[in-house]
Amino acid sequence: MVRVYREEIENLLLNTGRENIEKLIEHMDENGFFTAPCSGSFHLAYEGGLAEHSLNVCEMAFRLFETFKQDGIEEKGVTEESVIIAAILHDLGKMGQFGKSNYVPNMLKGRATKANPNPEPYQSEKKPFITNPELLYVDHEIRSIQIASQFIELTEEESFAILNHNGMYSNLRYTYSGKERPLNLIIHWADMWAARVIEAENTYNDDKEGE
Image 1 (cartoon, one colour):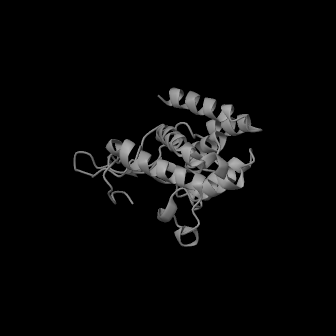
Image 2 (image 1 turned 45 degrees about the vertical axis):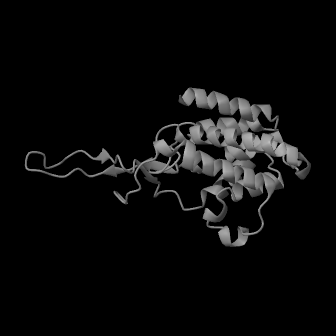
Image 3 (image 1 turned 30 degrees about the vertical axis):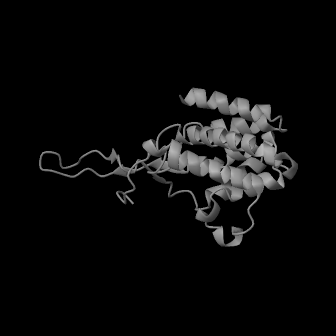
């Protein structure tokens, strides 16, 4: 499925016609976007989960975009191109940065016994991945904008939508409250629906194991 997700995402991004989008896609491929998990223990915490989630968000964002067309959302500056860019790239920072993955396997130490005093480490089932301790902490929303902006020019609305796609769940919630924008709301609602509804069955039990 990873190959399928990659092809779908490449086609969507290329269809925007955004200058240098090919270079961004190449960077995403080289830095593990298409194979990265989407989380450590919540939704789609497995290989290819980040790409799968990005496509789910894009699909839901398109549905909302089509619904709101009758309310004149295009007159408010929301375009199909911007929906694709913001939806596909909203979690771009979760692939990591500076040659370091954002998520690494959460390896637990096996319990030693007399028969097996040096057990092999194993990957946690409840929390398969953890945030890479070798990568300095930066909110993934900020990383997403930093990475994308190295290759393509984001519009102001796209940058705002990516930065605030977590809405009031974001660390930026106190400065964001009351400043919502149409594209931002579409990406936020699409992201929430994808994570909390579409992907709910592929969510691991939230556990502190291995932290």
